[in-house]
Image (cartoon, rainbow, N blue to C red):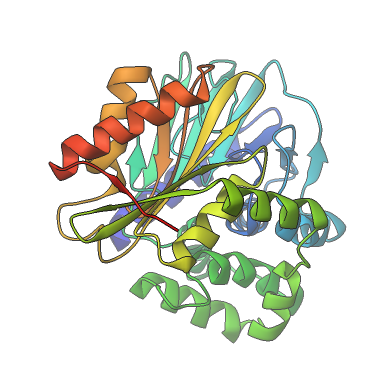
Length: 347
């Protein structure tokens, strides 16, 4: 693993040093703290390699509310600039915290070089990169994309001075803490990365404050409406919950999972597609069972769903179809998987 990272670092350093044009960075829609902390770490890596080109973050997909402060930290530290348009051409694009360009909602074929850095286990949308050379640093062993870039920084620091101040180290740590649930589910590399950042002054308390936000009224309303619409089923000793909201589907899925649903499925009707957020309990998704084998692969083959995420937490999108039709298909796939009917829970 160390040797693989060293090889990628040499590759990235060579591409960055030879880049004659702009360096662009993109992530998945509503970029979360892991995405932005990865951006901060990557931009510092670019600077430490000696490049005079400052990365530009493509923000057309939006940034999650709990990542807004982090985005400001990197921008105010002059590590990168933020743009609100999609470039029509470029020398280098780095896609962070997304398994492919499709998930980042960006076309890769207009860039000379494309680098994907990601840690997600599931990828139901095989990348189509078009022209140029594409490199992929992707390993589900890592619990965050942030720790991958931190390891690159750490290896670079063994060769050349890498100056990380307390503020930047803390901002980078924030994303790592977010994706590991404050180190409740870390990889060994995550722990090593956290130690490295703390040795450079990072504060866990300050990092958590950077990503703490008060829940807005619109999210509260979405959660309450989602609970009111939720339908719960029993099957083989498990509880399956299905609901729908206009927005904040991920927040509702987390809430349903916390309430005791072994599988939470939340649908949201968007302008040009149907978005599905899923959460699975450790009791249900274990051994050879994950969201892909249980539901997502079949959903992809039957309704053309694209998906990405982890074994127990994922997001899918389908073409613009009636929500009732997709929900019926989900129930049918689950009943086939469990080999039993989903029986509605009575109030």
